[in-house]
Image (cartoon, rainbow, N blue to C red; front, side, top):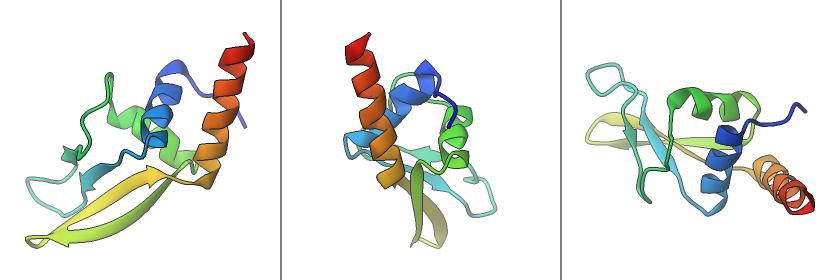
Length: 93
């Protein structure tokens, strides 16, 4: 697996704390809006989030609030393992 950028590692570390990000997936004005139940991470961008999703480092489940569908993104086992490896790499250097 290719190494993650510093921004991707930072966002993965944010998820490793148990944080989640919710994205509206219903067609309409809220499409793509992000909610941060545990606070917005520094330097957050949807591009970085998408890179973690493409690498299958996050899990996704959906729920509905007032008729709007939201995807809740959280770290999965693969993401946890990669985060642990990147922490070890940082400590070794």
